[in-house]
Image (cartoon, rainbow, N blue to C red; front, top):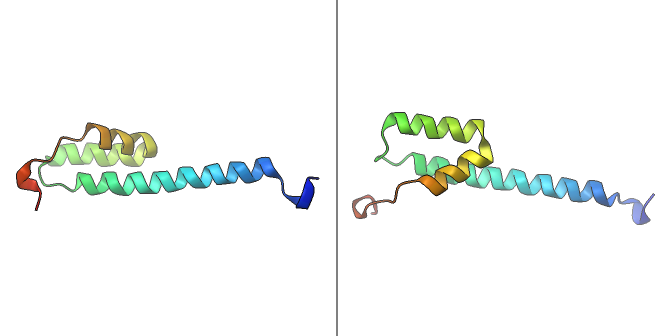
Length: 76
């Protein structure tokens, strides 16, 4: 038993899990928002959405890294 009844390795593991879930939700939301852009063809959108859903963290990071730059006409 540890002082105060806190099992520190379990607490740190749970905090790491919480951080991963927050990163997944944040990156996934941002990546899906970028996929909604009108300059992507529908087939590319479907591939990105499938990648983001099937490989959450990797897919969202790949979408953010590989996305094409927005042209001046897309900014309003």
